Image (cartoon, rainbow, N blue to C red; front, side, top):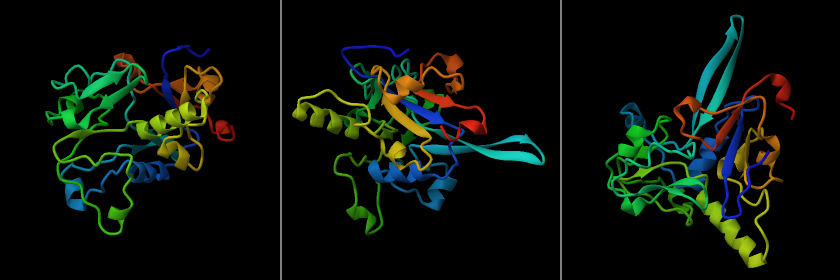
Length: 240
């Protein structure tokens, strides 16, 4: 049964692992939408790669019946986020309206306490001033800040798209509808492994699919209350 709340949204992501084929389309779309620069080989070797989504691969089964499995990992938008209380400048805080972990870049002084406290390791420090080779420098998203060196950054559930959809709905004099907001990763996913919506909306796809027998959350035992649900079962769920 969906939770209800008249004063905000509970933006939620469902990741169906039975449908994810590890194509990385979500990673590429995230880079393009959110102006995430591409790290050089040298930077990656030094452990300074920067992806707001990473695809972890693992193996399931026993030889010779072994299958590669993939699990996309990004900011879990925790309800009780360990990254927030350690920020000395309140650059990382919880939005009660959106129920998201918000990062205010111009408050961040780069202590990296939030990254150190994140159990999912999905926060990244900007080690250098971002640069894009031509013509990629001509396709930056004007709705997203280009983060400077010395600040932390992470997945925002494409909050710029959320705000744009809210403004459009307000201008049209209507409520926000399910499907009005699609983060770039969910929009680009060819297998529809990613489903995004408002858990407070009882008619949204995420409300209809949760709770599910196949659901679990990453490191749920830590009590961080993630807003990302993973579904894992059998291959028979691929066609759902």
